[in-house]
Image 1 (cartoon, rainbow over the protein chains, first blue to last red):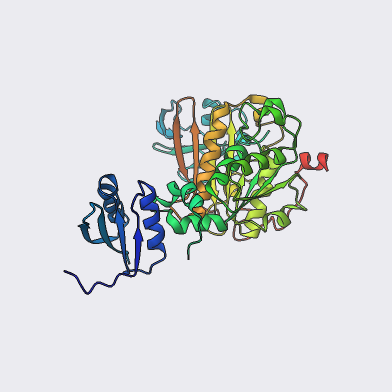
Image 2: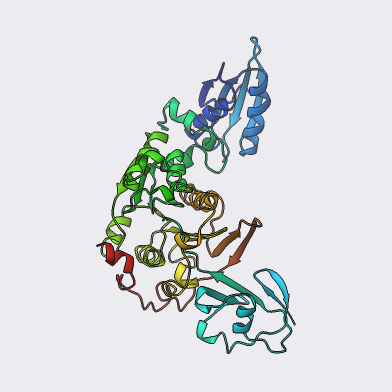
Length: 81
Length: 70
Length: 269
């Protein structure tokens, strides 16, 4: 699925709790251009329950949300235009 | 007549009330203590006595407030 | 690249999380220069919150010393500071809150002959002075220099503030043409003031400074916000630039600054 998506940056936020995971995600997005793609790895539980909604409220698009084998989540974000 | 003073409706007994008397009835003894807007326009303090109010006029008294530091 | 340290990201995380501030807004705050006029009731919360917010350069100007009667509302100073220069006392508290910021204490009194030289280094002026001559001087100088500022005044349970963007929005003189006659309007030192009122108004002014720098929200321009805290009534009165304003109007009659009405300043020179 979506194998053509080019990921412009990755941020591993294993073990980073709320709200600093959102802060680091915003910093990573600030370094990208409009429409570029960021992948972040978030812990299960509050992180994956909160961060995607916060990103949507800021106008970014969640392209994919997929649970990894260790229970964490890979989130593919398209930066707002 | 009914006018609005600082956002609050007021009934005025006089038929042709002037701005100065409305200032006094609102306990502003020294007209130099306020800037006055009538229906959004500033009125020069020298004109308060000569300015006659009409039904529905909106009056704002803007107070000098100088405190801050000491 | 965004060159915040991990410590700074933690320190400013609640700003960065805000959609209307974000990483970009925090960078702008770090590059901004704000001057606080007066290290008193309004200047105290302003100085502390500007420093806490990470405003890169903060000037604070006041020629006074801390007196025990200040401490009921001037929360940037402590009991141990009685007798010290207010700006030195404030600078210490600001640096303690946030060592990232550059604090410039200016132990002087703003006058016609020094104000332009002082304000030219700043992006925004927060007026928390305690007298009308200085309030008018700040207005006139900021209009002439094109520097945005926040006016603030408090008395008893009341406060008022407006934000002025010279050339765009109504200035203080559009509303109040000239200082009231001496002693016609009581000052806090004569009439008293509820301490927390200074905090209420000083933080509103600070929020305006932070909004101006980050571009967040809508400013209190062309608006006089006033409140009466005895009933917690807040009111906004719409204002407009006045074509006949003596300083920002079409044909200004005030084209240079003078100390003619600066009685306090003249005494202390």
